[in-house]
Each structure stands twice: as structure tokens, then as C-alpha cells.
Length: 141
Image (cartoon, rainbow, N blue to C red):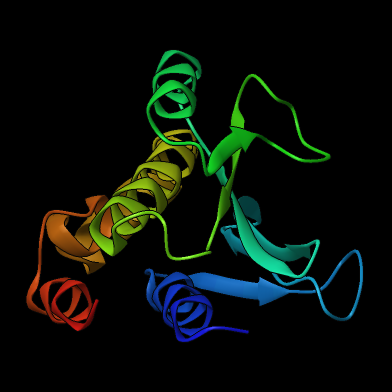
């Protein structure tokens, strides 16, 4: 696996209240917040990939712009993208896609759960406004 794979995995794990689980296979981590999946990492033809939730219209846009963004593999192709972590996408774009996925899931939580998160974490941690740790990761690539 590449350094990008490990950096993306670490970023997923660092999202507020994120949990790493292995419901499918021991080598396929699934990342959830309050029991709802926002990412899944796997490998396709030797290339690490991450499946991320996405607004349907935005998913189509991203697929038309980036060759390494495809409809979600083994997922609802309307709401999920599979993103190749082959280095062809700028890390900032991958981070933005992770933040978008996480935000969609958080916004879909019950009001009580969402407000609980909003009371305990900053907007930038929850909703992905650029923070120092993200900027440091972007500079690395």
C-alpha cells in the first residue's frame, strides 16, 4: 500500500466519533459515525481505493472530471463513488471528498445525535473546513 493509502486511512479514523469496523472481510475497513458508514477502503487490481458517500449530482460531476472517480464498487452507484488512491488525484481533493461523505452522514443523523456532535466538536472538525492538520497533509503531497 502507498503512503497516500495510510494517510487517507488515518484521516478517516481521525474524524469525530469515527469507528473502524470489519463487517465484510478482515482486510476491508469500514468507517462509521454513530453506526452509519461514510467510507470503506479496499483494493482493486492492486490499487487501493476508498468508497465515499456523495450527493448524486456531485457524484456525476466528479466522475466526469476525474478518471480515478468511478461509481461505487459494490455500492449504490447513485450515492457512492469509488476513488482510486493511485496518486492521480490531488490529496486536497481526496480530503474534500472524505469531508463531503462524512458531512452527508452526519447531516442524516437524528437531530439529537447531530446536535450532540455539534456541541462537542468544532465546525471545521465536523464539516471539513480547512484546518492545520489537513493543510499539513496537503503540503506533504
